[in-house]
Length: 320
Image (cartoon, rainbow, N blue to C red):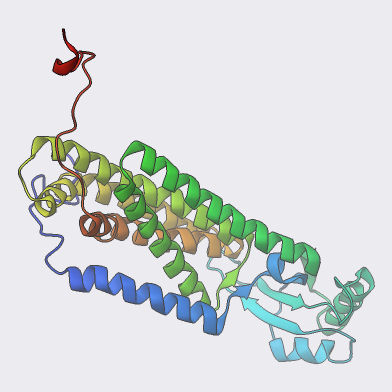
């Protein structure tokens, strides 16, 4: 007895509500771009520069008291957030204090860090500082460009790969699905102001790989079925192909999500943003493989005419 998330033989019409599925994807992509442009991303220390101090104490976090303790210090912008995690002990209270460098400085100096820690210890002698991260503004700018180049290069390589393996219409459809997944994921991070750092870039690259894997499975079956159903309309062949791969697609996504849920619950706050990005991206990648990529291919159309085969023989006119 095998577990199936979809019946063995399905006959869903994945184009029936295209105005809702494909149209909804287009609207969500635009909204994501608007959120990105208007609200911006909550860049982590990797991209923004400055210093982040992680505090830990047996006393409950009091953000107001922390601010009062640092009020007399000569500091740049200070952001204090409490960290919640179900894996923390009952007496484990964690906060993240982000300090931007003063005007004219690339980073917060060690002396300032020591002063901040001393001021916080005066408020709570039991407080410890498990980690201190510092990144200069110049390095942050270079990291942003490197991250953008990594995303563009990965997408470009995927475009060329699909083009060579299939046809250009497949490549355009695959890349459109990838852009859909990445832009909406980034839009969610902008809308909810979730910290965006280098680990999220790693998550986005992982999403690219996962999403294209699902899309290639559907495209591969579509190519096989185009040879099998030569007179069947392209839309119907696409529906057949997606139905045939549906069980595999759902099972792969389901098992991946199980692992990601465990990481979200027990992985801790350090990798929570990374895990959330992949979790959301897996759902989007599965959706786009079924409802976005093939719609683009159908819109562009495919050349289904018989290609002449070169058997090495000479044309009849050249025979003497």
